[in-house]
Amino acid sequence: MSSGLAGRVREQIGDAAFGMDGRLIDWRSSLLPATLNCLEDRHLTTLDPGRRRVPEAGAVIALNSFLPWEQHSGDLRLADLSSVDKLTFDARCPTGVRGTPPHLDMIAARGQSIVAATARGPGYLGRRFAGLAAAYDSVEVPPAMRPWHEILPLLRQSGRTFA
Image (cartoon, rainbow, N blue to C red):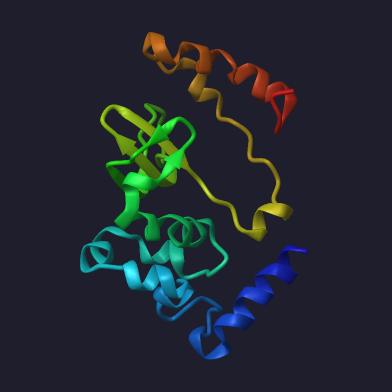
């Protein structure tokens, strides 16, 4: 199923857009027309093109889904956050754990409130669950984050669900 979905996306873009490595020559070929119209020079310096050379990648899905909202962020509502002030793409989020910090595809912010989004392409359907590093157990968290921190063992026990 995932290869069929990825193949259909690639078919829509066209073979000429892909290099010998199977990745897009120009990452902007993965963007929908509405997203391309919103792309500004400042985005070209802040977005990671390497994460967008595979058109079915989550980073592409997030950009196509949320960049058009940037010009109308006051109308965007995510969870309990409305009238967003700022959208940030390709956000690295240090955790205090050794290694590469996780990426969040998009963070919407208003004042001190944030909502983060991560997107997954069709490749996610066939992937194994990577698990949660035990190093997170020893991270010191602020009091407001303790309830989240306390569910980590439950997540480890049940695999992919919180049930």
